[in-house]
Length: 137
Image (cartoon, rainbow, N blue to C red; front, side, top):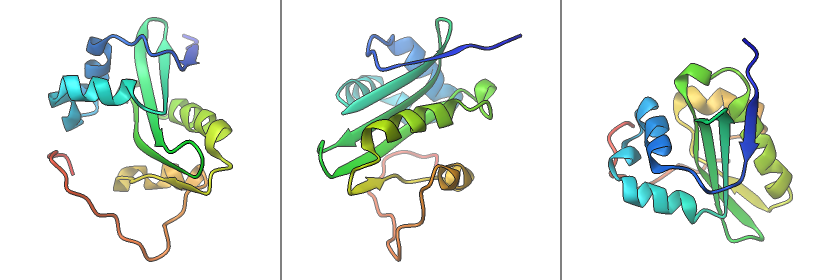
């Protein structure tokens, strides 16, 4: 079976499709569906990956539009991981933000290698800090 993935920046994404993707990845933000949907829809950039009419990946960026961009979410459905979909999303983000002074993200241990391959490096001696209301970390 040949898979054709379509990447788009349209925001007409059904909430149910978003929740399916977040639940499949066991992200606790799925437990706050209204806030999750609003956060994604109000992102500076929102990209989604589709296999036909199935949402298989999503990534967003929050930015001031000039100097700083933060990538809070990049998810690929577990059945589609390892097929280049996350890379497609990040490459598209780089088309828009590569010239920015600072690009920031927080990577879980299993995602560190992926982001290093995308060109990200540890931010000097900085330490990630947060007040977090989820449970998966």
